[in-house]
Image (cartoon, rainbow, N blue to C red; front, side, top):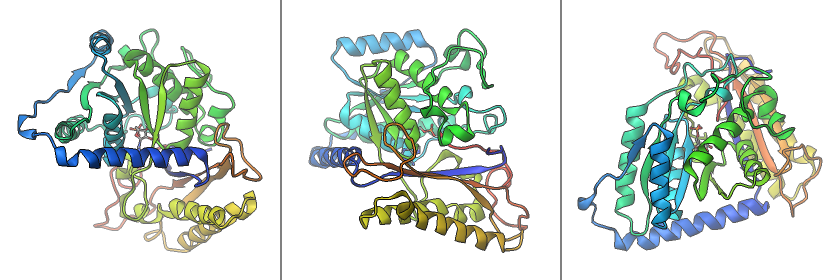
Length: 377
Ligand code: AMP
């Protein structure tokens, strides 16, 4: 069970032979072509007029959506918890390539945080978020055929949970959506209320915004499986789009929570990405069994952990591997062997433990290397 004093880094890949990745790749190529092909016909951005309206309440947004529908406009929804970075923007870009209007929601959803997780300290950067969206909208305004960021929905919790105060306890009081056992595996095993909160808030956002398409990051791979299941099982008329992970040059996935890492934990936190790449290489070398695929990943993580543990407290960044998983792409159940026709999801989670002794001028990140943080969204 992960405690609140851990930083968790998750990196996920859909292995190369999965049909979903093939779809993903061709889709990205299509988008790239679409943007590239529009480059010579850039619109004159001197005539740029901001088109983004900020909504706090449901009714005005519904009116706006209804008017869009009557004008044959299409809505691509990008749900976020704010503290935006280039990863979020890549979702908005793809949504703008495929829709006339992009709705971005910014809401830190309390019901997906366990009682001892980092809800209170989760980064909130509203002004910067809006500036980033405004800048991106300006960029989109200059691209022929691209959609615009026409709505930002930033509701209060009273708006999102009108009946009861939101509850993060187990079993929880309120109206929730749960997927069992999908939502209890992997991430859900150490964060029992997480996917219940995610599925519930997404259902609310889908009902409020009524998008044609929704955009989610592949980084949070189990979340994408949960959302696909939500859409399938509740017959939602929505197309779920999965966008590849934006990464730092060394491979670390961009994340709003990276601000907590500091230099030392940031350097070691790349271990998960390295481990999963080793597992991916095994599959590319035609290995198909669980042991053959996962052992180099476990070995790399073990070696790195031993090396860190052997260092002095003022030098080391300790971590624990929560899981390394090779799972079915629809159920997230662990696989003993991969059927190449069906593919699999390779994923993992590492908990970066608090820094024990910081140096006098060391960058320990927001919270001095100690901030209680749980997981990702
Ligand atoms: P969050 O604000 O963390 O809830 O993330 C909102 C959406 O952005 C989710 O669908 C995430 O999977 C996606 N996202 C977060 N980080 C990245 C990234 N580095 N690359 C692509 N998508 C991301």
